[in-house]
Amino acid sequence: MIGNEIGILAQVAASSSCRNSREQRRLHSNFNTLHDFGILTFSGELVAQHAHELKTVLMKALASSDRLLIRLENIARHDDHCVQVLCNALRISRALRKRIFFSGNYVKNLGTVLDGTHYYGAIEFLER
Image (tube, rainbow, N blue to C red; front, side, top):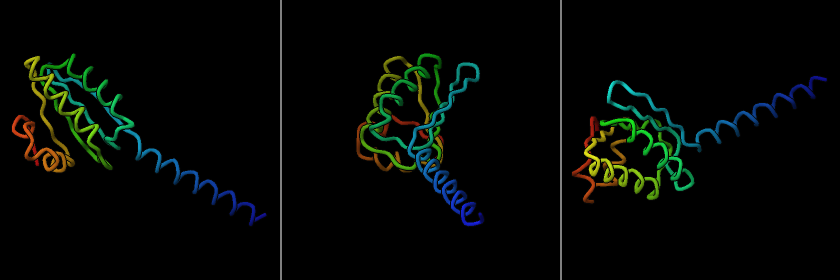
């Protein structure tokens, strides 16, 4: 009986570990507004698999805010696809005369990736 219970506990622990690993691979977003200021927080992975979702969330946030703060918190990894989506959002915001600001514990990585590109000078970082 005790051996069976230990086996069940081991399965639950393994299942929980797999679930936590899958959660880290997902893209999480949260959008709130304060007057005409939108706050969009991302965590998880900014990778090609999530590029469409990232674009959709960004466009909705831009449509409802004149100023948008994009907080990049606890980003596990990123790739060029999602960096390009962020740069396109920046380009669109400028065409619409809206402003995007970046903050969070991942902006230093984003700044490093964009350093030397024409987007780097156009990005407004609230913190580095």
